[in-house]
Length: 126
Image (tube, rainbow, N blue to C red):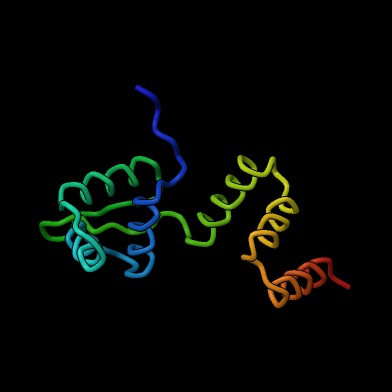
């Protein structure tokens, strides 16, 4: 059996977004939030949250008779790592190639390009 990837799957990311939003949540809390969007089994949510704990994204503590989960990594830290991993794998670590793709695919508009340029200038400092 292959070792588990530390990268988040789409379903894991969906769960993490709920936990980040709620700040702390039981499996039932996450299950109910997911049910508003789509059908999913309670046991699937429980399994996914256990996997997220194994991967180090969640930590849990026993409160009364239920485990309460909290994110063990900040949302911006996780997103930054995911974006870096994506750019590395898909665009050979070239953010420029990503931006070119977004422009050609009409996903990045003139206002966006101006904002990116402004952010680059600000990050370079005086």
